Image 1 (cartoon, helix red, strand yellow):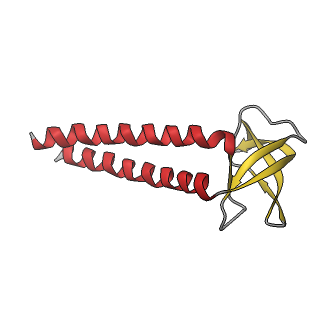
Image 2 (cartoon, rainbow, N blue to C red; image 1 turned 120 degrees about the vertical axis):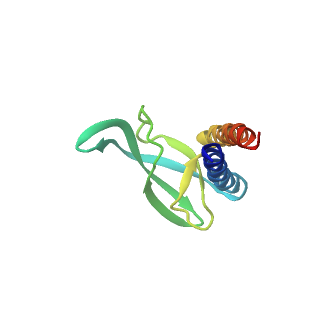
Image 3 (spheres, one colour; image 1 turned 180 degrees about the vertical axis):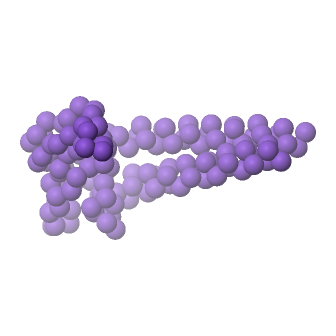
Length: 130
């Protein structure tokens, strides 16, 4: 029974990774490309201590509307203030975006995660059925 539970956990993780990969694929295929200017940089905090990750406030225009949003990437090195970055915005909600440079690596990591979860699930499912 223990092996069956672990196999189900592996399958659940693979499904979660698949959903994330589908969201990234949707953004890559249908996302709106925009140039974003880095307006402000601040260091993130965790429980009133610096976290070592930087948060950037970006200004970009999508379909005639200008947005100013903070990213959620959490880079360990700050981007240069005033520099421009290429981003992909969700066509339904332009406030949600990802950096174009990060999208391919996130997709690769998600695919590897799904593969590992399936191998994990397969190993315990095989042991259970044996």
